Amino acid sequence: MCVFSPFRYMIPLYTDIEQFFSINPEDGMITTKRALDREAQAWHNISASATEIGGHHQDTKVRVNIKVKDVNDNAPEFATNNEVHMCETVAPGKVIETVSAVDKDLMAHRQHFTFRLAPEVAHNHNFSVKDNRDSTASIYVLRKGFSRGTQDVYYLPIEINDNGLPSMRSTNTLTIRVCSCDSRGTILSCNVEPYVLAAGLSTGALIAILACIVILLATNPDGANGFLPRKDIKPELQFPLRPGGGHTGHSVDVDDFIKSRIAEADSDATAPPYDSIQIYGYEGRGSLAGSLSSLESVTTESDLDYDYLQSWGPRFKKLADLYGTKDCFMDDEDEEDS
Image 1 (cartoon, rainbow, N blue to C red):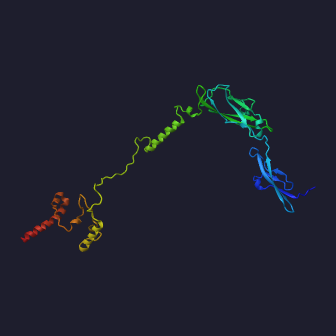
Image 2 (image 1 turned 90 degrees about the vertical axis):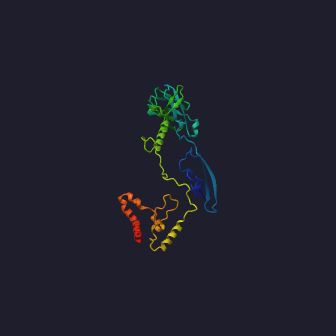
Image 3 (image 1 turned 180 degrees about the vertical axis):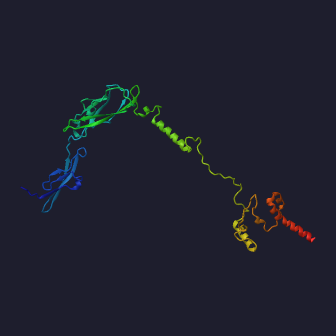
C-alpha cells in the first residue's frame, strides 16, 4: 500500500557540487550516484532538507557527514626509489639491495607483503629475489663478470602481493645500474661515456674542446686554413687637417661676395650672365695655390711673360703665338709713331 508523505526531501546542489549522492524525495533515503574513493576523499559533508507539503510550507535542513570506509582496492608498490647501483666486480651471492613495499589502503599496517620474480624473468641467470617473510625481500647476484661496456643497465621485474581481501598485487621494475668502483667497493662512476672513450676524455672535456674550436672559427671567418683573424679596416683621412683651421677674423662672407659680384655684373654690360663662374667663383682664402680662375685677371693687365710657352713644344705653339701677337702689334705701332 502506498503511504502518502507530507514531506519532500532534497539535497541542495551547493553542498554536493560533484553530485556523489542522491536522495529519494519521498522517503529521504540517501544513495550514491558515483564510486567513492577513500584515498581521494575520506569524508563527504552534505546537507539534506525536508519541506512540508501544503499548509504553511515549513522546511528544515540538516547536516549529513558521510565517512567512506576503507577496502583493499590499492595494489602494493615499492616503498623507496627503484634504482640500484652495483659494482662491476661484485661477487656472486652478494646482496645488492633490500626492497620493501607500501600500500595506500588504511589497513596496510596490518597487511603482509610477499615478493617474487615476475614469471617472465623467473629463470634469469643474473639476479634472484629472496622473500624475507617480514614484508621485505633481498636481491642477490647470481654471477660475476658484469661490464658496463657490454650492458650498463638491467631491469628486474618483481611481483608484490598483499594479504588483503580481495588480495591485490602489482609488478614493479627494479633498475640495476652497473658502475665502476675502486678496490674498496666505493662507486666512482655509473656513466658509460668515460668507459667508451678510448682517449680517456670525459663528455665535459669534449664539450670544452668543441667550444674552443667554435670560438676560433668565429674569430677567423676564413675557416680552418686561415692563420690570422680578419681585421676590419676603417677608412682614414688621406690628408691631415690643416692646423689653425676654423673661422678667422679676416674670413669673407660668401653671401657678401656673391652680392658684390652681382653688382659688378649689373654695372658691366659685357659681363657674362648671373649663372657664370664670375659671380659664383668664390674660392676662399688662405689657399697656397692661389686662385685657379682666370676671371680674377679679366679687368687687369697681365704682367706674365708667355715666351716660355715656346719651349713647351709644338702643341703649345699656337697658344704662344696668340699671346705673343700683342707685343708684336705694340712694337709695330711704336715704329709708325716714330
